[in-house]
View 1 (cartoon, rainbow, N blue to C red):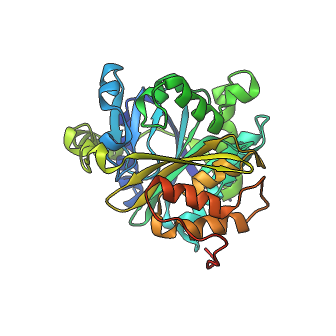
View 2: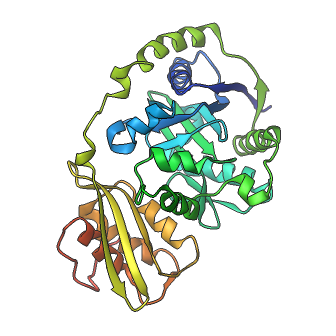
View 3: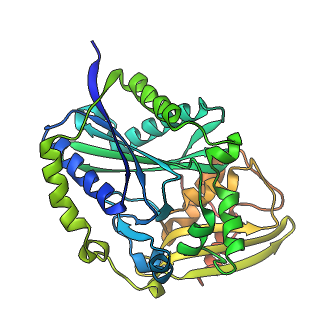
Length: 363
């Protein structure tokens, strides 16, 4: 007989309320007060940080205030993002025995694969991208993250059903953020939505059903609709007092000057290759990189995949990571090789250029 897991839908809530529920449900699962649970959720307009990131480094804080956008810190990692009621969130609260022997990273891949299958059933070709992203034709359509607490694991995803890129371009620190139409165009080249792909907004009930049926099949369980318990409510109220407070949001506050946007460009026979790098100066880590210019790459997902692979990579590992990426898949970028991408990033951050055709170890 299949195990019964719980299915809940907490609807549209503020960022502080949703994140307080993250903590409450994770604590409850760790204490084995609740069964493994799938939660659906939505956010009011929110600018969300990764758990260790700084709001000043990720967002235009004045712009957020002017637009009534709440800034909040997640309990999971991952890139900063803008979200609102147009996106659908889903979360799984699991016990370690649900995870399997390969650990949380393997679980994340497994859950992303299942979600990609659920999204594909709507009529698109969704696939898991290395890391915790789901893409369609090279464009990101969902992101995911996870955190563990003792024997409990939280996996959370965000599906782009629709998007307000105008607001996102003005809130996030992006290359060419002024003028905003340039930043918006860069986002549109890297992200897509179900509405854009299908020409309509799919029924929310259908999207949810596809997701919970995919996880039922993958784990061999059955979901039963339920509600929050009294103990979860108590944990939620305590968590909300701590999370809906400046001290939580400013937990890792650092000035934007310690994570600048740096740019460089180089001309090649295949065209102009430009790199914009968001660099964490303290740790010498690439928070994010954008490659643009008049280059043509095949398959279309190549450049977004490379950008995803370089997220949160230390500069000391840049060359190894780029070489590994190009070795791991077929690529076609006329006139450009891995050394050219390494060189333009190093030029952007003011490092000496790496010698071409270097022999580097396997990633």
